[in-house]
Amino acid sequence: MKRVEHPQIELQIAPMIDVCFLLLFFYILPSKPVKQEADMTMTLPGTVSQEQSLEIPDEQRVTIQDNGQVILNDMPLDKPDSKDLPTLFATLKRFKESCKANKTEAMVTVDVADNAQHQRVVDVLNICAQAEIGGVTFAGATEGEE
Image 1 (spheres, one colour):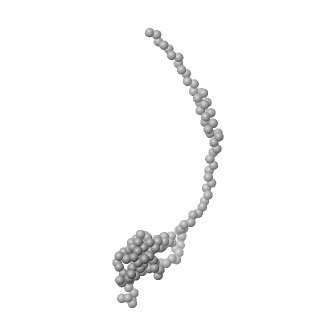
Image 2 (spheres, rainbow, N blue to C red):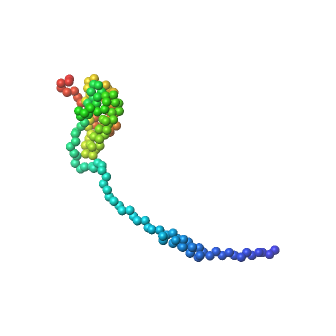
Image 3 (cartoon, helix red, strand yellow):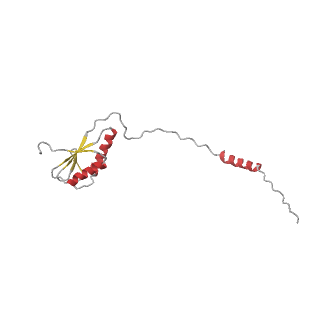
């Protein structure tokens, strides 16, 4: 048996490299380089921490009347039957943020009428906790009330 010799196939790499370079140039040269965006500095509104504390009220005074009405610094807030007290919460939250910005402690004094329901006091204390105010005190009886 005779062996059949196959002609050896020769692969030339130089023309393939030339074609690769042509394709590379074809796609890279027409493209434009991306310009860097300019860095624009801007200041946004917000709270600025201060070196010295500002004069703000030392404490907020919350009064709970016999009918359940909550009064903050002589201003009635929410309805007497409102359990979640949204206006009181928003006001105390703003007070806490301003105290934090001024580097002072937020203090709330709760003055409860003699015939006020205990649940109403718990509601006010829960609102103080939600507003992250830890400095809560109760007002004592004045000399005329004893």
